[in-house]
Length: 109
Length: 117
Image (cartoon, rainbow over all chains, first blue to last red; front, side, top):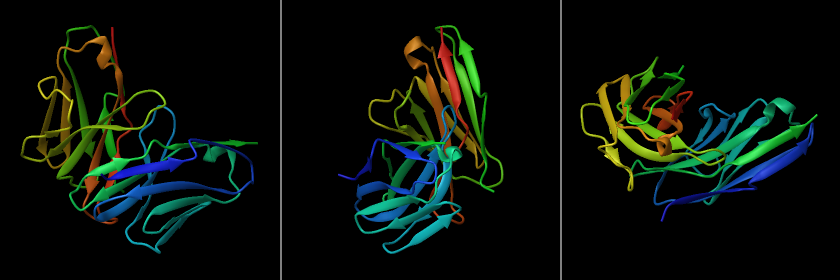
């Protein structure tokens, strides 16, 4: 069964303290792996799409990487405005999407 | 690019009434749109997938007669919550799949907060 597991559930960082969020997945034919950021009371905001193992994408302080079993979202020198819930999702070749439960990130000034 | 809008952003209604929520892709065509609901501090729960010009596909446990979905054009899908009850109160979010670049990516609307009194 296709599924996505994110860890940790919650993460508190000091401003400037780099860390990584994990997304482990099992999927019957990966079409794409997606990272989103969601602020309270808002819809998810698209960050990255990764398609194959070894691929990396970067945007400002964020960097997403992908292996055959998991993806990492690396946050370098985070700022308080990076506080949000980060969601990971996968799409399979049957056009089905599976979302993780998210990692709630809090960056303390 | 890839902007999705929803209207209304919030709605309060009386029990027994019907509420319609619109989802529009503003700068791209979306043959496939998705409807989710989200409870506080929980992840997204897919309700249905709608394809332009055809009937929506509902997830198991979602009442298709209660949650009517219409995808009449390549830029508009609507969700109608019929005979709403307090347990239908939730945050409803739509998304649209852009077949352009990056491929297979869903772009989400800002969500609609429904409160049924």
